[in-house]
Length: 112
Figure (cartoon, rainbow, N blue to C red):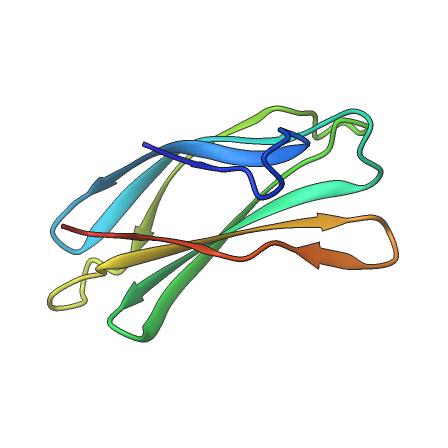
């Protein structure tokens, strides 16, 4: 299980679970944007093998649009042809206010 709530106040966060496979991982969870947050929230998921980025996936929520919030996700990340596979997923959460992007520090989740 993971939960990434950069300000600790629940204004914008993502959480869920990561299931590690031989060469890939399944990421399932929710990204949340609160109704009083102008703009939208995007969670960035980056899969790595060592220090090499293999794949990136984004998921966005917006309480003030048709996208909605919370927004569920369920995807596989990585490369099934990569010998050794991915060993880390970096999660970054960014708020967009229409004019600028504010990203919190990243959290890294490693394959055991």
